[in-house]
Length: 317
Image (spheres, helix red, strand yellow):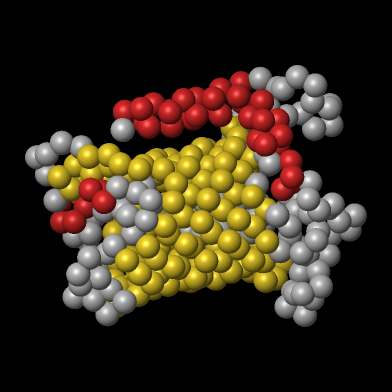
């Protein structure tokens, strides 16, 4: 386990230190950091599979089968009054991004104070086209029972194919399927199999205010133990307001948000609903390097956790 943690830390250092200088040979119009050059080289067959559009067209249900599937993805232009499209902390995003995300969370006094939890997550988001994206999530999970020592194991790998249903200049509406594979350590509650279909929507409300919404349901298949629920309905909503221009040094696109996330388990031994609030902020530190942080606390089912600290590093490429 120490070797795995060391390898993960080394990868984090390589990616992070890659932002300390601009890569050699990058054209003046698009200066790239080392990690961007490396990731673009590795994923060239995916990034360059389809050419981008000369004029970006709207995607909808009427042209679902004829538009967007063979058009390469590119980040949409951002005007001075446009809310930026980027992921927050917990709520699933509705739009595409090409990035690596490193997230650390610490949950205080989970399960009515019986355990402390840590989670480190590595996420890779790869748009194949404007209509289709594939996402991979993995990492480690740590548990410390009250009065005991920490147990840390690899977490389950999640594979998430996503499809864009509708997209215009001020709206993104997508669907996805989270496929959880039993690749993690059973000692920390992993090694589980489940499917989570979902819908996610983002809307630009004007004045650099965006609204993120999410609705999904996890269906446990294996590894959840006796008394597991038949389904866990998940839902979330998060308004976000951006208060600085993207070009602001070290605080570009400074955005404040409040996520409201909920889960309702049904069909098991204990039907329960947990709703949490997660206020936080995200901002651009350097070109294509973002940081977000927040603190989550329960509104209902307060015995589930006392609170959870979040911090994320995003590396666009």
